[in-house]
Amino acid sequence: MIPPWLQDLPGIILASRVRAARNLEGVPFRGVLPPMAARDFCDRIRGTWFGGSFQESLDETGSDLAERADHLRVPSDILETGSPWLALRSGSRGMIVLQSDHFRIWAVRSGLDLLGSLEDLAEIEPSLASLGDLARDPEWGWRTASPEDVGTGLRASVLVHAPALWLARRVSTLTDGLEALGGRLTSPWHGEELGSMLIVSNRATLGSTELEIAARVGAWAARISQEEDRAANDLVEHWGNELRDSVHRSDALLASARLLSPSELAQRAAIACLGARLGWLPASRARDAIELLMVTRPGTLRARRSAEIPEGHPGLDDLRASETRRLWGREPR
Amino acid sequence: MNSSNSDHSTVCPGCGHSWEDARRTTFLGCSRCWDTFREPLRQVLREFQGTVATQNVPGLREQLVHRSRTDLERGLREALEREDYAEALRLRDILNSGDLA
Image (cartoon, rainbow over all chains, first blue to last red):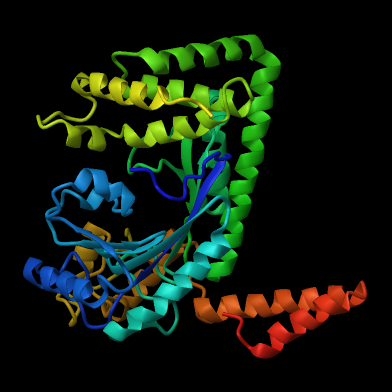
């Protein structure tokens, strides 16, 4: 399932997302709430909003969890806990209920548009008050389940695809620089090591306004985009022939491979995407490469194969390759 | 949450969570824990957030409205400077309508 914010011809900056944590007074947080009470809580929220503000819903009892979880922005760390949770979504806005906090409302837009995402968030936020008093601290703003989120409760993040930085091994330098500035660079997929797809976000949620946080994260993303251009130019300048050869080899391999490991797919997709941006492959291959990285997630592949296959097992390599051939076999535009 | 500077026998009256529970799970039990464990949390915030600054700012919607107004006022000044009166009138009407959300 491809998210609507993935543009037809994506640039380096793919999407801007904001999420805000909010909690009700007098209701225990997820870790303390007994399972029955948590289920009742989720049902109450579903009853209030589903069909009105939000048209899609998913909870831990869903039969197609792995495929739809990414689509509804459900983080992988709560998928298998067994505790009740609920995800609601409408277009590019949504809410996750009982992921640490009672509510995590989110909005996402294509490209670099954190301000637009904040405007979307501001439309959802007032309706939360209809459920009861929201927990607010006289000194520190919104009270959250973790001290990491207190204050604004806001995590502003920008998804970037930076194949040149990754291939040139420059991502770790960026990580260190961002840490020093109060930001962080993570994989879009919880707990995975950094690849060509990166999320830049704020670490601190206290002491700044939402607009200040969004402006800061936006500036970091713009800087990463510049660094990606610079890395691509350096690669072309020093190893132009080798890179070009590698781009066309990757193009051919993605079209015909019978077995593909996750690391080989990541490498080949990154090179092909870079080649498309450099004009050596059709421009639409940049989008195909990003789509490929999304549709071949281990959870998604596992869901299509009935047998239990652990993550990283070569048993998924043939399925990964066939998905890749199907996608890469599309006529480039 | 590494702060150990707390009375270990204290339990939150809202949820029964102790500071030891919070340290172990890195999560609080309910919103009242913010009152119960205020002092150790102050120390934790210094670590996690790098600040214990007071978060006394307008709500998100108010911030966005204020920003829209500021942008429109700047646009109006610039339109007048370049003698673009049609644009100035348009921006003035939006500002006067009060519908900036």
